[in-house]
Image 1: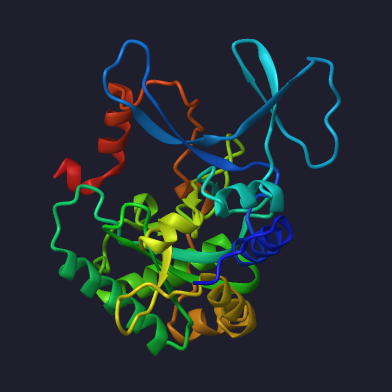
Image 2: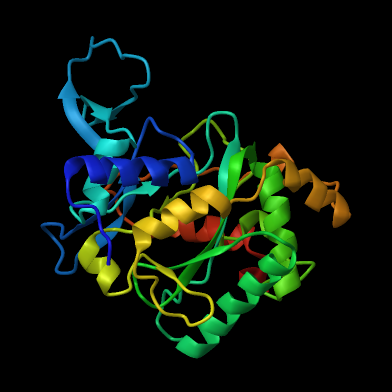
Length: 305
């Protein structure tokens, strides 16, 4: 398996991944896992990566963002070749906020992860393969990644230039309906198996995130966060070469998005009023409050039923 060894090789691959995923660069979403002092079990999740402490009168430089915790001010770490190199080394697990400041994205991704581990692995793979075949049948190059759990998959479609998130989601809804992953009348505004998970930003956070592929050589060798051959379901050994291949000939021209939507008879996009407000969570904040559950139930027609 070809994996970058030197710092320059790691930064080169990091740059290629960043070129693929686009998104926000000022802040890197980071996976955390820790055990609170008053708990026996660890909790995990994602939050913006907090960097060094700064003075309250510090003037932010171009491209810098800050955050506060317990009346202290910190810089946020950016998503760049240095931080993504740590991800590639397996030292950190990073993601990307797909929607940029212009509410555009460079990919759409479907999540087929069996989070509870209760589904038949063959059934999950069949669903993934079916969705991939629908994409390919529409002449949309799609790429399968086995998730960090090893129990599910992400199917990525990369664009060669940013496209409006609302149009990417319209494309995703059509492909999901064609594959049978959702019903035609299902409320897509709260559908959480697809990225970007929203068409617009609320101004109160960075939107939803997705983990980056290729988190460390050891994980990749075990088939985790690894590119998968659609024909066999096996890990593609040369992950670095596969990324280069996607960049060279595996992306969808952004100009084809409007063409596809017109061919499918799609003219109505999600409106800004459909946006569900997303708030970033601190890494030490309690998960699963009663208020949050009530909000989910109010948004989800199936749970109400």
